[in-house]
Image (cartoon, rainbow, N blue to C red; front, top):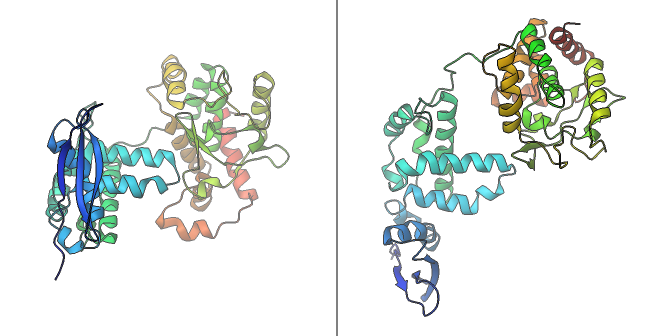
Length: 376
């Protein structure tokens, strides 16, 4: 006989000292067991306690998966994924992004719905309607695609855990086509912006525009990463919100060319910098720690852009500018992709076939961008 699904017994346990707690009781191998879920202060209603205990019900009924199809909610699935699988993700930034997608978008709409009730067409309509939490503007297609992929990942794990017998989100289509053309600076605008900046911010923007590095990689650079004799920069880490992390992809770890003109600018900055040891951050803050890129953008770069009579720019503007400059220099598409260090399923064959050394074509293309942006 197939075992029945265990809902367990959820009740308040009185305490002589301290706040009362919610207690969840269930059977395992014929023996009654119990676990404390949380305090009544933290979970004031039974509905709150039910949501908190759902991932435990999934574990208790793990040996009886077929009975769970109509009993597990998306919220319970999120709780189990966050507890068991999300910590295995190597990048803290990726963990943070998933938590945002789960808590800001997926749980509010689907959290109380049973897994087998989520319909692909309803998900597509929901994605279409999504708007920013602060601006109330429609979310960018790329952001919607990230949310769709987060929900898809949840169902993939539900499938592995035998909580569902298929993944309905595989039928959900979400375009990543941009609503706006990415902002690209002309060489004249780039130089005008540099003229309004003081170091270290001027050199940070110079590195961004002349290498295409992501800002998390720029603030994560250490002096030991710069190979002066080989004229190359090793990209070994990223830093987001002051936290050191791995690079975005394996392809991101490839070295980038260092034009002699940019090398001279970095040496000039090193002579003025307070932290200059090989293990120090190139653009360290006053305490020696990595700077917060958002604050640098808001407090220094955007005001400088306004003074230079350039409309609002972001850190990724410089990466787009680098790519556009490579194109203006007549760089082949293959070299563009290599210098941008892109990695996705469509370019996998190209990435795995790359020579890890910087070729003359890479250096020539990169130097062409530097000369164009600096007007030399």
